[in-house]
Length: 237
Image: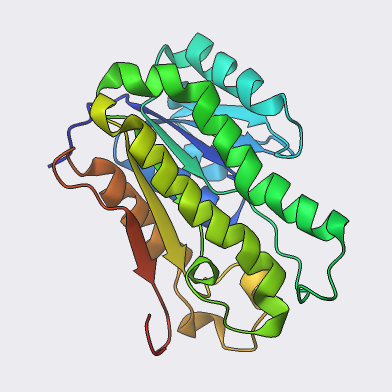
């Protein structure tokens, strides 16, 4: 059973489409208020009639001051932050030999540094609830390097998995529970550019949204450090 009351507040980055959009809609459906971080802010259609529980914020993960602005605005609007879903991310399909320093810096900046800053900016608010939740959208590429072309992306996603564990260690005694959610191919625009598998054979973003909501709702005594989900048979996942 969820420990969170109706009106609990979640911040979701990369919320304009894909996994972030579905996760935000699912949490709103379950009674949460949601603050949506988007590059191009726009009230989503599924928020119609619930605008009092939806905040839309301009958010660019590459801006090192964006997380604090977002957290401050969310607290001013709702007065609390109970959960973060750090979903914004990029993929640069280059081997570690093809990639240059700018490529690696960009991957680390968006996939690792930005979610760390978001957790840091919201830390006091999360701790004050005694049950703060942090979801880091990592990847199965953060668990294995499946191909040469995924190598540079994997560097950042291995770090994203470690970030989730580090947040969990830092806040466990204060009720923080952090989970690295590690999907394989999800039926989003990003996956469409990387695989020729039919979209109906990929993990669906609405299913992943329900998984995220379930992980957030678990009590402190049921901590899940990593959650792997795949659409296809692999040796380990």
